[in-house]
Length: 537
View 1 (cartoon, rainbow, N blue to C red):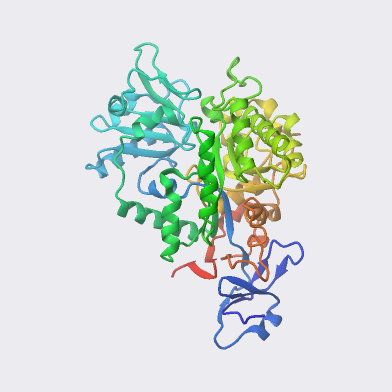
View 2: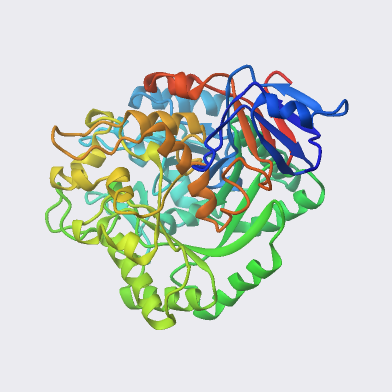
């Protein structure tokens, strides 16, 4: 065995490896782990040249893998107007006006992370209210999930949306019935994209600075790998450039974006990306598409009516035949498929497409995925395990208690609650489950996700318990995340031969009450054998 050049000792090592779950010391040589064992065993591997780190009894985990992430998008918005702290409409107005006053030379104002729960259903946001706040510049606000936006009159006018516009199914410019003009609410991407296209791009230098800020933020939170959910603006080339320059501190697994208008022949481009990008930090091998929207804006596809909108079952962005064709061709090319599906109708259509591809192409270890799965029809519950489909879910998307969210539970209705965000129910079928954040839709802080997973409560007495154990939650952010990108033999566990991706916390996770888990913070992050972040360094 090679002598370690870096040795972490006196740590509470949780390896995520059932064969050897616990250790005290980990030795690293280059970018690989070469030793895992007790402190006593570690002494024989230490040399005068070995750098040592005292873990002080704190938890050492495999580097965290966020399985649903938007690295560039989140990074570029770090200095935009942040609205997640808004507590009510008055506070929202104050945040907007304060930001506008502090940035008098910004030609456009963009706000992100707005929570639906602060918007009164009887008095929704409209362009007139926004005009009172910012009358002289275009203003565009986004809901936290990026599926609804609100624009002032100036933004609508510049984008020629004031009188509405024909859009693809599932996208809506909401009209004011009294005036016949756009109200200011825009549902789904095609509705607000005409405005976004007009917003001046940041310079290349600004984008690189913000991207490195995003990389640093991930490292500060113990994240060493992400499954990026988009490749907009060909961002994979940016990451490859940073990797070539030795500046990547995060492993990124990338898809190729597929839209309803994308021809089947373009799937060959995704296969070429897979061939071209197989580096230590930057890898490709998947496609990503949206089957539906979200329940909050009635754009998620349901099997039956929304509870609070009889006759409305939402909508899909792909017909069953169209998606079946895409899934079959992508599967034939050896590509993994990620599909955004929130409503149970979208989940069913996605699973049907995977089953169709399996019938046409024959079974293989495809590990296709469904992203989000906010609702699930009971008939589709066993199909994940049967088809080998991975459930990719985000703990922070679910309300911890029934009263932590007002809109979503009402849209879904109580009869859907037993299989809403059904982490444990899906896990118990034998399906693979992986966790992530969906940053910047919610915070990238994994410990906030840990808190949500460990403290989830049934919304009604007698409903299934979806709460996760700490071991399950760690697996969702480590071992299962590695499996979800075909890297289970390289990372996700601590053991000899594995990539040296590690995170050392400032406390013992296993001795921390679930209610306090979010207070434990990383103090060191190691990616590819390098210390990429250290507290107070």
